Image (cartoon, rainbow, N blue to C red; front, side):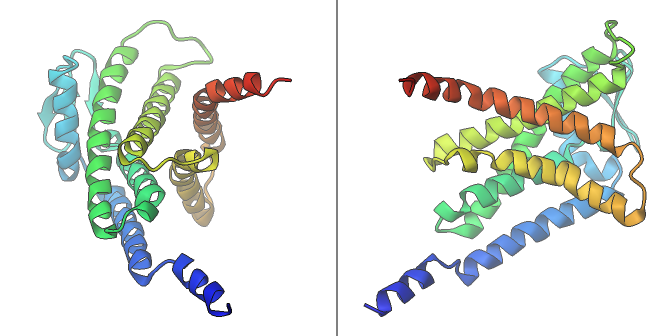
Length: 245
């Protein structure tokens, strides 16, 4: 009888292989972010080029590559440079996928690679959509004092990236058959806010410069929470009707 609890504890503890794979995931994500912080448009062609191709051939946006600058649309007065590469989304999608579904995978290394491929594919798709939407929003004429072109650009970017993250997460969940509870389904929100706001905030606090960050954080957090609420609202209403006395 004394051996069974001990065996149960050992079985529930993560193996060294799982810990090593998790460490590799963090190292890979940190390496990509570190590379991105110093990379220009030419170094990011591996993600910018397919994103621009998608926006050009599927969305009809005229984009021409200019060395050192990125892809330029003269019609829409749009520059798709290093800041449009969606690397933060790539990192968020990768970490969210790997750590959400790795416990259900026996081959952690294969899932690590597959998570990276899925995250990159989703990044290219989200980038293409964002370029298409941004091109048309930038040339639109419906802005107000409280909603500038820059504000609408940020609103569209956050909505597209976080919405794409949710779509990717639930698509993989359905494909893998690994159903998560409500707390587990909050994983994309935690990763999105943690990487897109938590990491930059830590850097700003370290260097003593947080000017302008609060307004950005409020926008991003508000949009992410609203989309998460809209995601769970139907099931909450159904449960409330079902359990009504």
